[in-house]
Length: 120
Image (cartoon, rainbow, N blue to C red):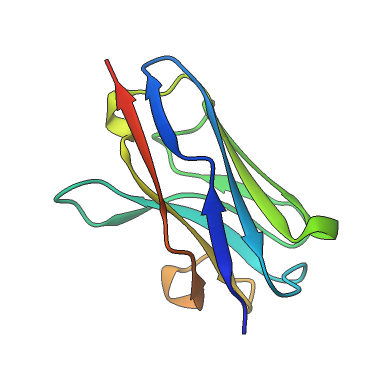
């Protein structure tokens, strides 16, 4: 059983930066890992994903502003968020996909979420 714990959320002004972390309790080095977010009144949406080999994928809305990375030795994944916009305000969740697929249904493990609020 893998447990995921996000941290690093908070309140930031538009144009600012935040770095989210996702610490895994188990060995997730062979898993694909991803970040998702859910804004008030909206469904959960994909933000970014990283494979066990380091391949990355991003939602169009965050390309060029967000960077996903992982440190397998620390069982930790990161999301560096730069040039934040008000529309980035959401609860951010990390997730782990044991089968290595980026499909939402393949993510078997989810964190509890961390709030990111971007003010104007």
